[in-house]
Length: 233
Length: 174
Image (cartoon, rainbow over all chains, first blue to last red; front, top):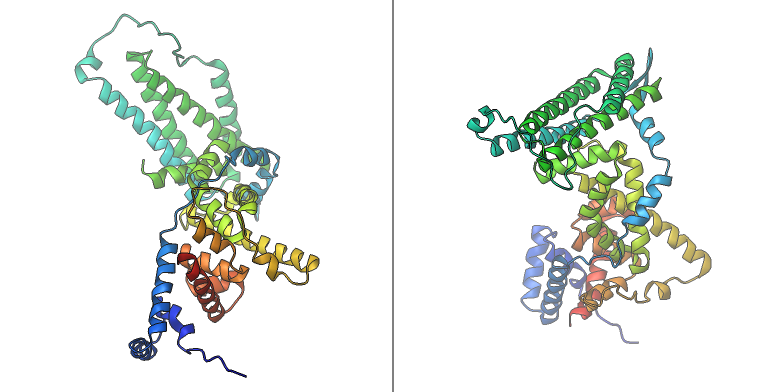
């Protein structure tokens, strides 16, 4: 029977490539590599494999998987699970806590929305232009959806939600209330800025879209916060 | 707004139930998740696994506290889900077939003809343990102690599997 002799260093070559050998072992293997052609060849091959793996590129899925995911989102029981994560018992009942990073991140978005409106106002109107009185109201062009400042249903919905939030705010922890109030203040400022800018140029599509977006975000934020209050009661 | 801030805002919105915001997160991360699934479990499983990852992420988004980047959190969730499926598939194989090695070595046809067929195909034909360690270490950059923790093996076993995978893949580059 012939015994197949294997080089004991062969199995350590990956560790050598990854620099995971102890210094003394590395010196020994260095000395061995100086005299062993086969190990040097194997070492070179292993380095090629590692380099090839590091340069591997990602392949795009053959189909868009989002429709399948979206369909499952509507059927998965998520909202109750979310509430279980954020509602915790206290001695007096239940308090609702939203993740601070989540609310802070939402605040960043709202600041960006309001900041964009302010930037736009400053970029599109020089101080002289803003100072001029424009008695003629430009006609809206085709396809321009004008923001309706006197939106009674919207105002009524906001008022209702604000009342729910006000009556149930003791169910929210202090930090959550502070962030919600900050977010609402940011949105309200964005709405005021957009309205002021639109007063100068009612047909501006960009400003109109920002006003609509800000109003929608206010409504959504109030709806979500009120729902949490109601669920926690 | 920086990309990090924009993603943070999308996470916050998605956690409140905004599916459009979650779609943006999906578009940003699906490539990496799908490729991880494909390399770990094979092309046939990749689409379904990817969908499962994002559905689970949607369900667990309320637990994301922002202590790490969202991509890091999502990626770890994907690895955990893939390893759960690996265990389930291993159990199914053991119930149906006494010897799983021939099945494990069956080549998985690539999904894209313009891929580097030899190397990716060779990865797909690695034995499961060696393939998982190779993908996690050499492609995804995990350390052996992390891999050992994920797979429930020792760091020494992880090193052995990695070496085994590399030695088998040498021929794919010749």
